[in-house]
Amino acid sequence: MAGTPLMLSVGLIEKDTNGDALWVWCYPTITAELRELLLRKCSLTGENDVFPTFVFGQFKRTWYYITTTQVQDPTALSKVTHFSIVLTAKDFNPEKYAAFGRVLCRSYMKYGNPAKITEGYISVLTNGICQSEENGSFFTKDYDAKKAYLAGSIKDIVNQFGMETIILYTGLMLKKRIVVYHPRIEALQEFTRTLPTLTWHRQDWSILHPYMHLNQNELEALKTCTGYVAGFTDLKVTDRPGIYDVFVNLVESEIIIAPHAKETMTMGKLHKDIGQLIVQSAGDPEKSDGQVIKDISHKTKEILTTLASLAPDEEGKSKITLEILKERRFPPATESFLYHLAAAEQMLQI
Image 1 (cartoon, rainbow, N blue to C red):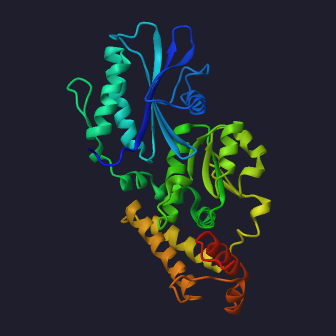
Image 2 (image 1 turned 30 degrees about the vertical axis):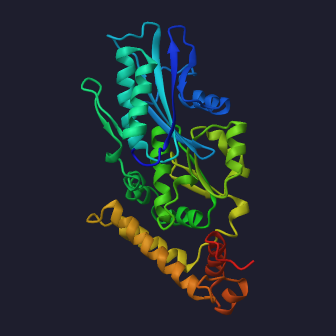
Image 3 (image 1 turned 60 degrees about the horizontal axis):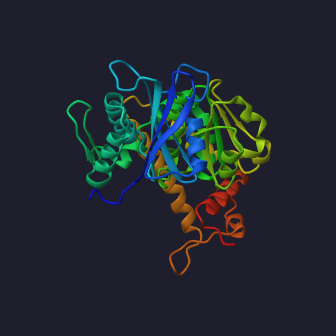
């Protein structure tokens, strides 16, 4: 066995010569709610002839990975113009599921038989391997979770936003709701997937919802999350100020703090120091993205250690109160940040 199975299902969506996109098949099973969502995400249901070849996202703690391809001769698929292979899983690993999706696409293109998809899926589920001379090979062991976390470029983000990156850092540290806009799915996913590296000490990618629609079901599910990074390709998301504390317009390189969040997001000397460290580290051509993340993480740990040292209790768990912070006479912005950070890190005495 290849350890605890992380994959949950595999499905197939086809677009026929009449322009209709249909959910054709799945194994073992999938809910009607998720099926409807995946049809929306695959982009085959629209009028557009240009489709993103790969998209990924999350809905209610289930990750989905969709590989879409155009049918090309020679093929066993006579009445199909495009199709999508949809994988759902418990883990975040776009590179892993993109590679596996490509292998399954080649197999289906050749045989036109979902049974071949099932064979490959079960092989990976049980043995972590799918081998075929003509369709390529896939090995689960080649795709480490940490590699997936580090696949984006934090240096690119800092290069785009400079000192304003501190707003993103603060928002993530305080578990705020961050909404990101870009009309191109690929740019949106690349940017959003990198943001959780700013809070590397948590290594929590469950906060990521990289491809959202302004759909009631999706927005209701999002509202149940404490803090998140959510990506939208529709600028009408700005008409929904109730779903974000920080809004990032990637096209305009603009970061806006929502009026209701300004008090908890007030910046002071501590933020300036962290911002300068981030900019300096990311601006060093000798440093890799991994080293920049390490520098930021080191600074974060310093802050958390300081916070923990303010009120150690007998069980070794620190519990912070507003009174403790006030006694230290921190500047107002630092006091506010540390108080809300203690809440985010579950170090606050209620």
